[in-house]
Image (cartoon, rainbow, N blue to C red):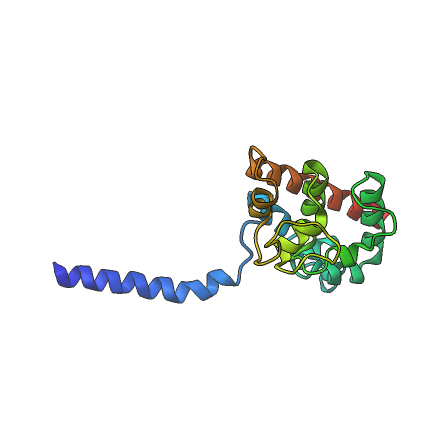
Length: 194
């Protein structure tokens, strides 16, 4: 009996080890029916793949937001950059003259950055402090962020808890901001195609 148990355990471990590289090559959470939620919803914005004609240009669209840094995505798609910047400024979320590529530098993807812009506005947390925490970089000179801000990279939800400890539900705020970010990116993407 012990020998059978040892063989089964070994087989399970071997299966897990050989399957891990295959699993790691697939996008997680996004795509059709993927059920995006929380910060990963923004991270996976447009993560589905397009294998049809013109697929080679997918990084030049908002659909490539999950494939590259926001700076790269926006630099490769200046129409999206212009429309998204204008949309965020018209909603009072981004000050006039702000370069979105610069503001989003260091973020994992565009959805994550735009969600942070919404959290900043919704909870009155300085964007520079959220950005520092989420990118793991020191806050910009002259920014009044709490000590330790940017000392380590953290999620949007953790950054909300750290910078606004009196917020009743950081997870709810994160989800709300992610939905707002997805809506803004989709709207700007549609406008940039017109």
